[in-house]
Image (tube, rainbow, N blue to C red; front, side, top):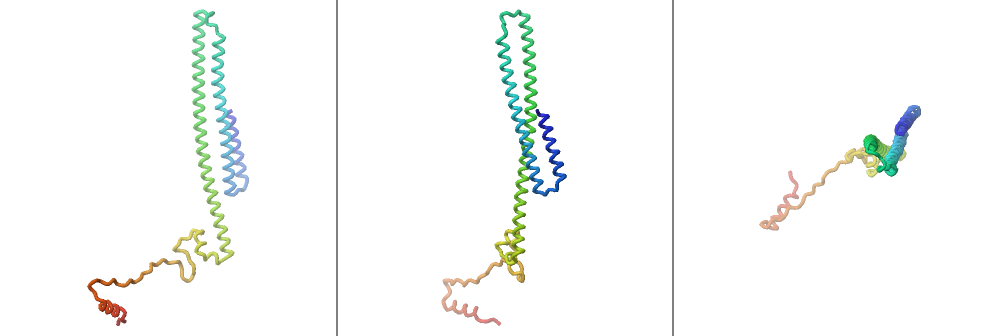
Length: 216
């Protein structure tokens, strides 16, 4: 069953590779092919995992029921000492064989579990890449639409609110091409002087008159 699943996966991958090489597909179609390939691989792994679990459970039940029936049919009182020794040795051999089979099954399950987690991590990585690619593709489509709208309506390209969708820096935005980029300058205002307690109103008036008089 395991070898058959591996062969099926290999055939599926080869068929998809041939299909992807023969067909002239775009980037979006390539991501779709990779996505559906990974989905099919995940389904195969899930079927394989369920099959291994059912097989292990069936082996556990069969071993328990077989040993119970064997002991029920065995009449120990009618056996001689030599026969009991032979049965004991045979039971020990069967027990060792069962232990070896259990260890082999555990090892196989461990290997299958590692392979499953590896493919699951690969699936998550593919899903992340697919999501990023879809987001980038959607963003690119939106930018193309905005550029097309700008080409069809030149006045739209001068709108400051529209410029943020084109990833233009604030210091590079232009409202009037003759004036160039927008410059942010801080306005400085002159505040009146505060009157000190020692100064008189006449002195304040004199200072204001002097400051307002024209200089040579």
